[in-house]
Length: 390
Ligand SMILES: Cc1ncc(COP(=O)(O)O)c(C=O)c1O
Image (cartoon, rainbow, N blue to C red; front, side, top):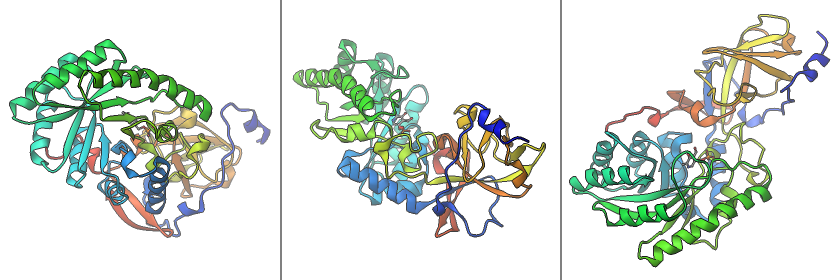
């Protein structure tokens, strides 16, 4: 097999050597595929983000990446008191870990409104808030919460360019926020500006994009406050624009809400120079299960073990592996082509970074915990379940 074949293939990339911190001295009892988390690296990622934000008070990290009580506690230990989540189960997990302030950054509709009431009743020590972006769902929220004799914080979800949820910055947004302040059971608590569409590699371009989306938001905030409706917080961004929002120290009430940083992944990887110091802290341990042809290696890393939402060539990053091309991904199989296939035999262990760590974690009921090159325990991915108790 001519080795030049692979350098001519599209999507082939050379892979950097594995971070020695990932290596497990003895993998003989590690089932594959397993997801392994490294608390030392997680602690470092948290410390770096706290440092970049200028203190834990300017953070509201998103729990969806890790979904574990243990990482929620590591964040609380680092002084982070404000959290963001997307599901009622994540909110319950955070509240049960004694998180004092939880924003459910998701529009709640239908029976989830009743679950919100149950959550507020069950965890009176936690202050909950939820997103609003439409008059009908805001009215329904007010009706259900006030009928229960309760109050919940509301954060106006502004569509700052992603066009996924939210309301465009403008008169209708102002009317919705002002109107919500007058509805029973609702407490206006600020705006969310989530810009998941901003992933420009260049810091200057990301910064320009953030400044452009921020200007009209600040005008809207000033107008709301002129009309007597407070906007105490702006909940801003994910991991790519975190360094930019973190630098906005002149804007009061900015809370940065990155999620991925805590475990990081191959998708964000080393793409952003201004996120230096954030290291992938979740690694897949997989094994070669077959060598079906002279140039193919098949691993037990199917799409039930690593998330399949990135493009095929970006789904995983095999570490310390010869140049390869991913050619197939089934439920329990990952098939790669490589001129180096002859080096591998069934049973060989390969370490890999997920392309997208957040949905990858949600595929695992438990993760292994490694310290000092050894597996020292397991953590339950507690809020992977859709329902905990409420
Ligand atoms: C509303 C919201 N906030 C924050 C985040 C965190 O973003 P990231 O994964 O880039 O850290 C997400 C990610 O999906 C999100 O949807």
